Length: 164
Image 1 (tube, rainbow, N blue to C red):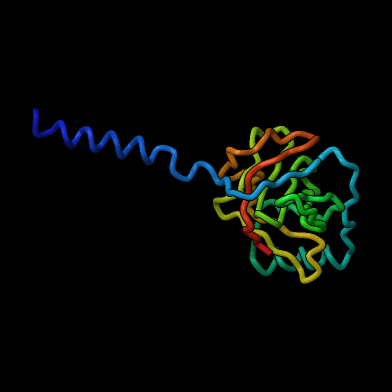
Image 2 (image 1 turned 90 degrees about the horizontal axis):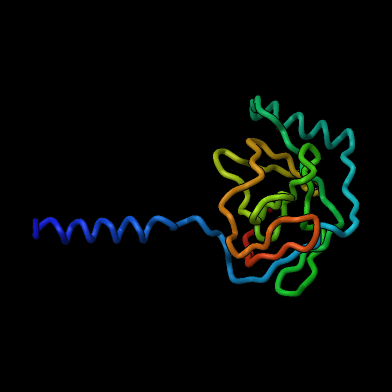
């Protein structure tokens, strides 16, 4: 029994130390956005819709397509206002995507999160006025440093990750 005890202790230590690994995507840069501020969204044109349909057809994608459109919301990173970085999902208006930091915000969620997983992909034309999202998930690994995502001020500790 005494020879097994050290292995049990090591096993329990490893299980506890790895239990929380990867469940917090927080970084070291203070970020915030006020989702209660009035804002405008980019209006997709017929040319934009054709681009989206062509992408979906060429990728032979059969699932739901979600379009994120650029908003006029200001995003603050390290106390610097960044314009043109916040998008809203047309098919799910409670979901926002912040390019700077690769962050997904869903009003009503406990935390801001990294952008999706499980095949989640985003595609944008050169204009970057909209993003076509396939295998959409309005969540991901949470930023445990985040305040709740409300229609008001939301803050979290992020990183300079950038998908586009």
